[in-house]
Amino acid sequence: GESVGLHLPTLSVQEGDNSIINCAYSNSASDYFIWYKQESGKGPQFIIDIRSNMDKRQGQRVTVLLNKTVKHLSLQIAATQPGDSAVYFCAEHNYGQNFVFGPGTRLSVLP
Amino acid sequence: ETGVTQSPTHLIKTRGQQVTLRCSSQSGHNTVSWYQQALGQGPQFIFQYYREEENGRGNFPPRFSGLQFPNYSSELNVNALELDDSALYLCASRGVGPDTQYFGPGTRLTVL
Image (cartoon, rainbow over all chains, first blue to last red; front, side, top):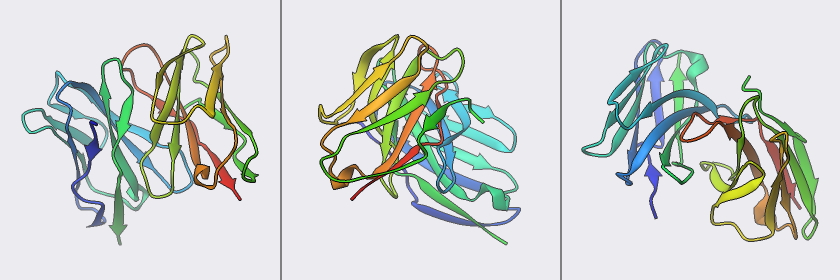
C-alpha cells in the first residue's frame, strides 16, 4: 500500500543551528501534507501544513518544502532550540482517504 | 491546546476485557478520527466518523468499533482485549475535506 517514510530516524543538531527533517511519500495523488511534533507522553502537535498546489510554505521559524517531482517533503527549523527536541512526523492525505503517517524522526538538540 | 480532549488519561485492563475510550472534538469540527500509536511508531489510522457515520476504516479487526454523537464527540470501543492492544490511542478532529487535523493528548492503554 501507499506509505510515508523518513530518510533519517534520528537527527542531532547543535542549539542555534538549522534542522532539516526529510520525508518521502509514494502516492502522487496525495493532496495535502502536515508536519506534527510529538513530545514524550503527548499527542501530536500541528506544526505546519502544505497543499499539493504549493511548493513552499513558511511559518514561525519553520518552513515546509514540497517537491512533487521526486515526492519529497522537508521540514526546516531555523535556530533550533532545546524545546524543539521531539519526534517529528509527516502525514500524507489522499482525497477521500485519511492521513498516513511515517515512523517519525527523533530530533535531539545538543547544548 | 487544541480543544480536543480525551478520557481517561491512562487505563489498565487485562486480556479479554472490553474498554471504552472517549473524545470530545474541537468546536466546529464534525469529523473525528481514531489512531493507535504503538511505542516507537507513528500513529496508525483505525477509523473515522463524519456526522455520526463511519466513513473510513484502517486495517483493524471488527472488535474495534466506534460511535459518534450528535455533538460530534466520539467513543472507541475495543472488545476481547489482547496484549498487542497496549498503545496510545489518539483522537483527532477536523472540519470538512483535507483540512488541518488536530489531536488530543491520547489515552494510554495497558493490557496485562
